Image 1 (tube, rainbow, N blue to C red):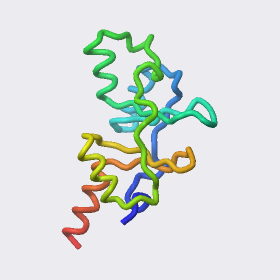
Image 2: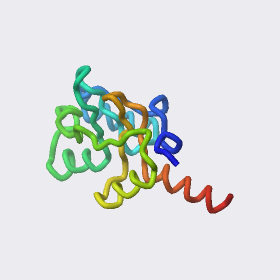
Image 3: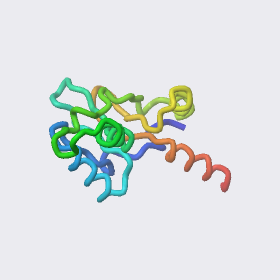
Image 4: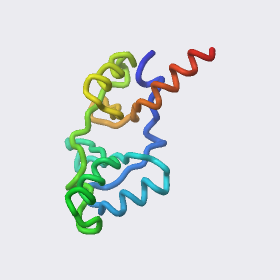
Amino acid sequence: MLVEEVMTPKEKLVRVSPMASVREALELMKKHKVKAVIVEKSGEHGAYGLVTFKNILQAVVAEDGDIDLLNVYDIMNSPAISVSRRLEMKYAARMMVQNSIKRLLVIDDNELHGILTMTDIIGVVLDEMEG
């Protein structure tokens, strides 16, 4: 099974500007009930980023950062770790486990196609158990 068959497509992803405040990102996460938002690339040849609850917890709580003064750019993981949509899912899963990563962006030719999460993969495993 390929990554593109399991991933959450880009149309369903929550995105944020790198210049948005951390508060704005957190509000988007709360509104859409997600644990991560995709950070748009800053230009055609730029890199996509990712902001997670962990990034916010570290920057705002652990390091006493100001949620209104910090921009997403300051705390995001960029470039986000990514895989091709044409990769076998098992290799993406292996990459996630070996590197303790919960999410991989799905990017081909520097264009975002979706995100692959551990939850997506476990969903497939559960479906196969039931079927």
